[in-house]
Image (cartoon, rainbow, N blue to C red; front, side):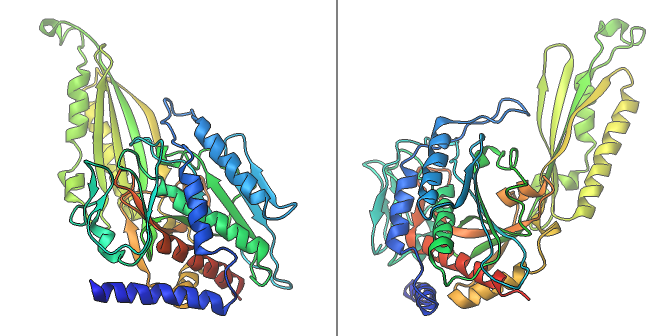
Length: 443
């Protein structure tokens, strides 16, 4: 444990030493802590949509968007900061590098918190110079080092931990990211020595209900190089993720007495729906998938009481060729079911992509920029192939460029055990400053 702490302490010391070598960052670690605490005290929990075209908005998200926008507008007069009707916060900052055309660099995060857990009132506590051991959240709830939620605590010795009182989540997902992004905006405005190309920032609502890209205005945010600030811990960077699509098929039955089923052309929708599901190859099941393998998951079958059954199927894959193969399996399953049950009607209710693998459309310079930032800060990078999605992946489904998801210091998210680590959050900020410098240095 001492050796792990020494390595991490040296890495973070390199971050701050490197930052000082280029000029002290415009935002201090204590300022970032104050910013984060002000954010988590706002109840910005999102709520799920009840229909495909709904974009539900909570008052807490409106408050959070307005609070952040007011803060940003205070950095400099005339800063281009806009809040849309749907509570997206957009900031555009022009290049300060003359005589050089640089790609537009973008950063994203989200201001909502998950509805999966009680979200308010958040009562954060700060432990400075954490010395190990279990953390008491309240009389009956502990964050234990040997629990899945506390597994990362062993790497947090000597750091500053922000945790809850055990009755709500913290909101580090993604108010850690918000703290980093707003600090970046402050730095680019106030630090005139920081060279940068054209910058775009967006702070999204409704990410935790899968809608962060649903109302994005691509005239205000559509960068060529994108980094989303929403990954866990320090050094973790998502370089690829699942492409997620779904198909929803309704099987429409034709009622008749079973004794006269042949003559009256009885259509058994339950049998047809079951046949459709059973036609998927067993090797495509989720429990047989790992690593970069995808899967087909028929996760729901509902009845409307009129001999009609609706089947919802999730499709997940990294590789486009595997995705095409899965689509073929689904088409063949539906075709064979229609042949086997000719008296059952079918209707495809949805056949859409929900989010897409960022690796398909990521800017080719992204890895070089990350490598440069890692070297400059001393923060080693651990690339992750995410068996899920990110905000950047949702952007991709809207035709935007893909981008990596960068660490932000959040831990044990979507639970009352959630905590954040200040030094990791600040490390994300320093790392992102180097991403800005690295993009400005592109030839």
